[in-house]
Every structure is written in C-alpha cells, then in structure tokens.
Length: 149
Image 1 (cartoon, rainbow, N blue to C red):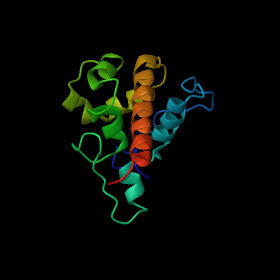
Image 2 (tube, helix red, strand yellow; image 1 turned 60 degrees about the vertical axis):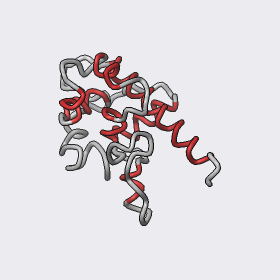
Image 3 (cartoon, rainbow, N blue to C red; image 1 turned 90 degrees about the vertical axis):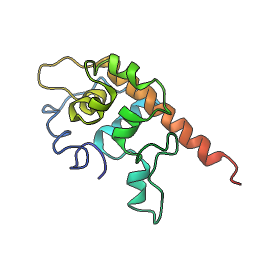
Image 4 (spheres, rainbow, N blue to C red; image 1 turned 45 degrees about the vertical axis):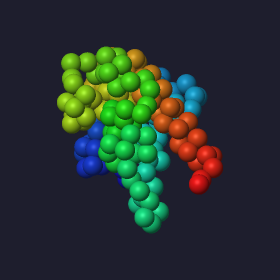
C-alpha cells in the first residue's frame, strides 16, 4: 500500500499516531475530508498506487513533472497545487524549509493530522492539506474529461 504506513513513507506513521478509538474531528463530510481519509490510510489514488495495478501507467506528477506522484508529493511538494506549500508549512509545519519538510516524516504526519499523545491538533495544517487534496482531485477530473488529441 502506498502512503503513510509503508516503508516508502516511513514505517509506523499510521500505527504510531492513534492509540484510542474515538471520533476524529478532522472530518467534515467534504471532498477534502474524504481525500484526507484516503491519504491518512495510504490508499489515495495517486499515479504511484494506480501503477501497481495498471501496466505501463506513468507515475510522474502531471501537474509539475517534478517527481513521482505520491501522497508525500501531493501533500508537501507539488508546485501545481494550492494553497502553496509555504502557506501550508506556515500553518502547522513551521520551522522547516520546503526541502527539509519533504524529507521529514513528521511534516507529512502533521499535515495529515497525526499527532503525539497529548499534542493539540494542527487544524490549520490539516485544512491546508484538505484544500491541496481538493485542488489535486479537481485537476485529476479535468484531465480525465479533457478531450485527447
């Protein structure tokens, strides 16, 4: 499974973040919330994940052509999405440069709403992540519906 709970994104990111069975206030029944849930569980339909099941599917990000399209790339790195990365970092992943944040599993964990025991949630970072995921989804739909030449 691509994403947060695998060796690709860092072992134990999912399992280390939640210890109690309780309602998550991160979800508000929006498109962004659904995509956040997929990203948090490692099943967001990125090109990297889909390439595992679709022969010869390109995995490069079609929006920026800068890297493979993974959860980490969409949430923290892609320059073709809004809000801009520095805005998302200012809202909850502060103190790290764009490159430093992409190499740090804790930046991805914070952006996806994971936190340590007793830590307050990073609402601003999570909201920025939802907006980025919604932007990514809209662009995926636009590409699918665009006439091919």
